Image (cartoon, rainbow, N blue to C red; front, side, top):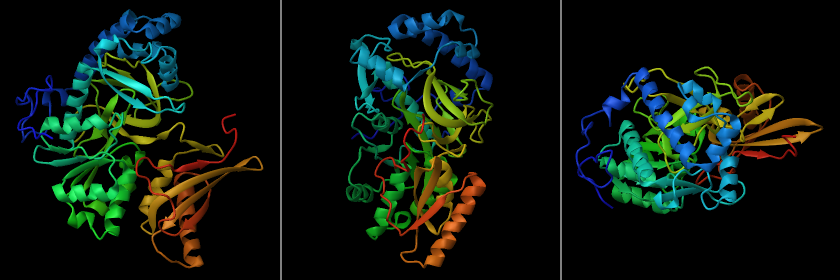
Amino acid sequence: MVIASALLSPNSASTAVPHPHSGRDSRYWDAALETQSRESWERLKLASLKSHLQHAYLGSPYYRAAWYAAGVHPSQLKTLDDLRRFPFIDKKVVRDRQLAMPPFGDICAVPERDIVYISASSGSTGVPTASPFTQQDFDDWIDYEARQFWSSGLRPEDRYAHSLNFSLFVGGPCVLGAQKLGALSIHAGTLPSDRLLAIIQQFKATAIWTTPSYAWYLGETAIKQGIDPARDLSIRRIFVAGEPGGSIPETRNRIEALWGASVYDYYGLSDIFGSCAGMCEERNGLHWAEDHIHVEVIDPDSGEPVAEGERGELVLTTLKKSARPMIRFRTGDIVSFTSEPCACGRTSQRMLGVHGRLDDMLIIKGVNVFPSDVEAIARKDHALTGEYRLIVRRVDHLDQLTVQIERTAAEASADADAELAGRFSHQLKSIVGISASVEILPPDTLPRATHKAKRVDDQRQGVWG
């Protein structure tokens, strides 16, 4: 492991020279870029997009054929709104094209000799879906990770434990961003909890990155070992991703109280690169990698854009990634955005959290229900552990929702459980707009997640017709 003595240039992954826009006392990794006007952001994105579409058209057989069939051409792009003429793609298209033209698919726009790295996600077929990178793609990604870590307050004097899976997972190499800014970086990976806690203690780690569920689980595990995370450990920053919890105030507050640390929500996806957005020290939304990825938020049914601040499906278009351009990629994530300037001085668009996924969304008696909506209630009530599970059944052609939640008390009377269930049910009805059966369970009944938590047990058959 290396400890960088100086910040690296954003254009070089190997030359240790001072970063041209930042220093130890600077708030920004690249002040000119991060604080530019919205008009400058739009001009930058449009120029990048024109070049990127041309690259995709010339290099990718898939895009060339798909755009010809749709009657569009890169030369027709005059404004960012013109991108809406181009067809969507989604995970199924990416997977199908890889299977049709192995190993990387004909969405790729460079020859294989230019590909130096791949991440992979499993997908529903069990066949890993690769995400390829050229050297420049990889360097751009890692420089953005350094910028994002810097915006969250990570500095060269920190000791950072990277506790994400390294096995083809796109979040693994993000640790190189921490190294690039000069932090001592511990490539912990998915170690057993006891071992990870020992390493955190031994090296007095000040920051860690994991999922919200695992941050809670690891803190609970520490307490069971007689370790008070807030008093006995040195963690002061926790970066979380992979689940909506980091942007749910109630969840974030519980984790912060447990650890005595600040929680920063990050967002990424394997189809593009590691973390594409993250919270600055203001922690009021996730700043987007706007010089790398253009964002649309659409109505999932009509495909039309929704108003700023409204919930819709996230659609992403790469602006630089040359190995496999992603043009109007439907992520399935339900999000909302704002372009209002942040108090930190950065002017990039901010994502106001991931509210859920289309494939996690439950429709109960006509009401859209996301696990994150239920989580906000479960985490807020300190008579509950915060763990929960949603069970959906269809009885006599009607959908019935059961919410299982744990009380913190090891023992309780039937009356106390009934009162707790009634209180939760009332809050659920008031906030989410649905009625549910609520089951109160003893603490430690529900399984704890060491990666992403599985919150929904949908027992209906033929839900989607």
